[in-house]
Image (cartoon, rainbow, N blue to C red; front, side, top):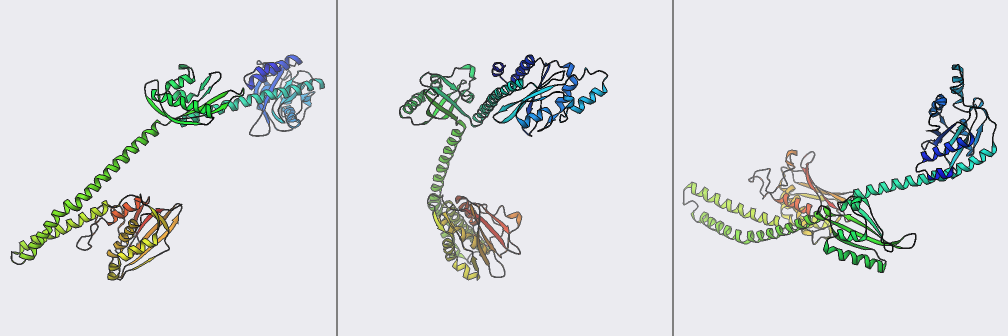
Length: 533
């Protein structure tokens, strides 16, 4: 019996073997298997019976399969509590059984007792340690006195079958672990392999086969086949890495190109280390992480960085050209037009004076736009970032704005400001542009500007609020565009590039900038800068 159960591949098969052998040994005609419900401390039917054709006991079997046996309830419930075999001489006299009333009702309703021919029964637990994992119960058509010797044998059988249950559980866990590992390898595109140095045997995971574009049956796993799948230029580096690892005992790591069966080339990060199996033989355990897409992204990023570097160089060259080659003829035009205005104003007709005035204004405007473009182009990256006290940069900005502050009788206040990692001149320019705009776009009462800062997680939120003319919500998105203007040039002078420079400075520092209307008047400009932590 135990040999047959041990050879079973599933719990169901082991239990059926046991039911059959016990019924054959005892001569009792009916056997039934129950299993512990993992969600509750009770036994429930597995639907396993011996014999398979149980027509003479159909009603009883139906009642049993519908019943639940908590601790102490019925014969299985007694076994669940005691963890020992139990015997019932006559089930009709067993008051704790949930089947007793149904059996008696059937006896009363039927003319013949044949549909319910169950009298005596015994059951024994299947123990895994001290846990009742299952129970087997057997039934006789006649009442029978307790057979202590039989129960002792059944107790030992229950313990031995418990070992089979434990083995099947371990097998199930191992199978599930392998399935989860295979799924994880597929999701991560991480194949694995092992090579026993002494025997030469090797294993590849399913994902490694997928990386190579193969099915497991298409190629036998071997170390030689693994090397052969590598790009010809990468085979020697792999072999040298493995040999050095075998010599030193240290792990190895390198990047390889591998050829798929369809000719496509993939890139893998290969890692490995030396272990020993149960026999003490050295085993090379390796992984191959398919990083082809990541490598493609890295290549694209490097190409993009190169393009950006080239664009920046071209922008620098443009700035150089604009600062000399464009400005020089513009200065000449402005000078000669100015000379015409001074020499001939009032001596020509009125239209000529207007035309000369337009030319002077246009040249001056062009000069201002070129200067603004140069200023924008010269706002560079963060190669020289250092710890900056924002209060110092604010004070520098206020010093640069002293003339405008005094002229407009403006009042600028501020909270305690943090230190950040940044470029001092750029942050000074940021504060100067925002506060300068707040002073410029004021009407009526003297400008009132407040600079605040609060920490929000991993960034500082700065605000520059004023009591000026404010900004409409539909305009807050376009004010950061280059040369954007919301008001006539005649009323508020400027190039329209100041806020665009603010946006560039904030983004170069890893932050964001936006504006909102301020209640009851004015506007608030917010920007974030990362904390130093």
